[in-house]
Length: 244
Image (cartoon, helix red, strand yellow):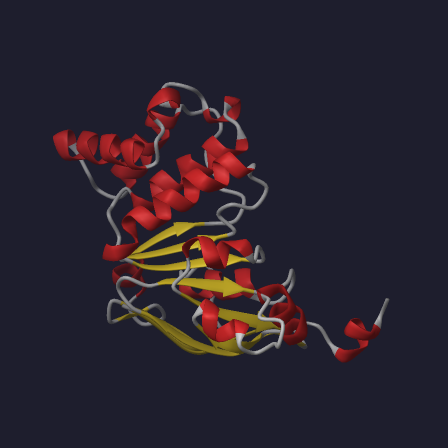
């Protein structure tokens, strides 16, 4: 459902992403792991069409994001980092606005909004303005807009960053609930996310993929069997590892 081929991105002389290739199929939750500054968000923005790649491309449900961007984006649900929204709108008004932008009208529009509210567990705050919500509810509101059109591909950038344990649990449960019917990428630097929701993971460091496999596959790369040790070994330079 999602195929990424040799994506590259340069900002002047700095090459932020250096040829990332990966695939995600229906029923998979791919953890896209890496330290801060590794190129995760830049890659996500290229896949979703928010940022033009220097080279390479992504195909979403057979649609090339560069050659047929509208059709490709129709297949994507995107939860960006920091969950942007219109803070002066209520949750229900914001989702109604998103539904209308996507072309829904009348009863179908209402049904889409109500279903998204239920899936994101927002019933208790549907009438509140977004600016009055906790970070967890704001995250879930943006999650609701990402799934409102029932996209086959869902891309989430740091969906649980900064949330408390209870809020993280709710977001992860939402991801698990819909994972069987979608291809999902969860970009994160939080290693516990892998065990919590991911069926497979890739690790990116300095703009390049350095590992690809199931959580158990990744653990075999270090005698300790600890994912944090594997992550550190793959993402830190020898000089960084030698520092006390």
